[in-house]
Length: 99
Image (cartoon, rainbow, N blue to C red; front, side, top):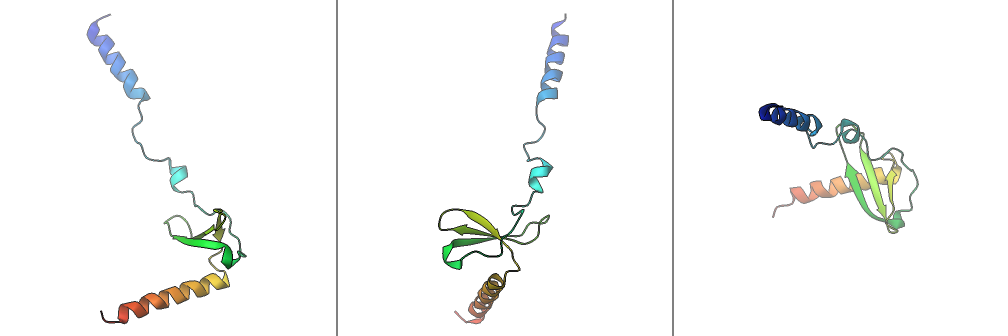
């Protein structure tokens, strides 16, 4: 076989088995973090709250507990709504004050 033909065949074989993109598959990109939520979490056990808003998912609230477990909290929970309202009011108040 000619050397050129073998080189072309090797390049075509290599091209067939290389990945075109290093991006995540669509199924992983569109997956929401919170698949289920809880309504009751003792507030004393929460170490930190994370808020996620992605285009394909509803507003998500993730609580990291003191035992390092993460749970998704229902954003409609009454105490969480009050917490968010207070936080927004505090931000607005701080913006209005002159430096």
